Length: 484
Image (cartoon, rainbow, N blue to C red; front, side, top):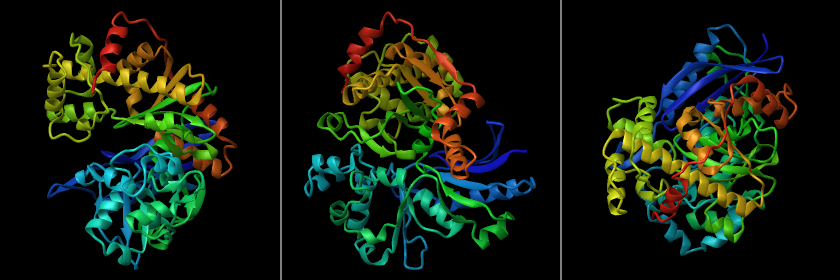
């Protein structure tokens, strides 16, 4: 039958429970349960319903138990930066803010009054984004000063879900580094930064490495889902960390793009790159699995087209929008990372207004808007590639695109053509696969990350795109570099 593990992979819009079977060095996966997730808006504030997420995990486990099969382990990954505050009885003490909440729009400058930007980067190596946990907690404590006394522990979201599953508390390393409160050089919580936000370091639990066995299901969970003796293993709980584990690279000359709501583009490094140049380009140094550092940049990814699709009342599928983009003659471009596109009330209107303000022909049709987004993302990939080569002195000839966005063959082709790199797309379920591979390595079924990547290459369809020359490439690149 093979060795069976379960991955819980939760993103900003949906989650899934996935079963894997490892047989004769081939991995197969099957979706057991899929559920929705969304940001709840209450009086202009944005929150997550984490209890809903846990209830859906239990539903998935119940569905699996009815198969009569026995999993050896389970691992959970989610997005990063968001957190849960626990009281003395180890219950959730406050609503769980979502990173798109606007309360941190002006917070970075408040922090810089206490400590310089350069000093924070030297300590943490983390990209400056207004929703980093550092800024979220600063505002939370400022608004609710009683947090200093009545909060017993701070957990990240996947660690909270792990706590509900097995009763053990920890924060997994890849997620801890995203907070911009973890000193990546000293490998511990940075007391100076914690003092600024007003939370004692003792309220942060032990940081554990990917692949740590946290425990087994609690008796309550066992009884509810009818499963026995399942190990709870912390994978790379940050979804991008798990996605990067699944990059099916056989050589070292690659960059990766974890393509979904966000496009996370970077390289693997043996050491953080916290130079002034890396700071000026706003690169982040996030913890990776097995001693690697993920040097990458957050790019406003397919969130842009997801919002367009939603505003069109889902009249068009993503495939329809790709077809319309190919047919469009629009030449409009945007800077995807302009903060105005983080959470506008109307993405279509925001794109049109931006194009008008920058003196471009305003895209008018759904196809025009889609083409503008896809070409702009591909040009953003080119810019990040140039910066990665500069800060790392690394030879990069290949780009691996993993995750749901790897299905967009039009964007893959644009990426190859604009970067002039070979592009490899797949696997699609990259995050869950990386999550599972860490579990198999912990269980001793796979010996190393390199072996895991060979298995992924042999188990899933990886498509190659060879770059071609575009006549308009240089003209569009010049215009893109001038955009605000």
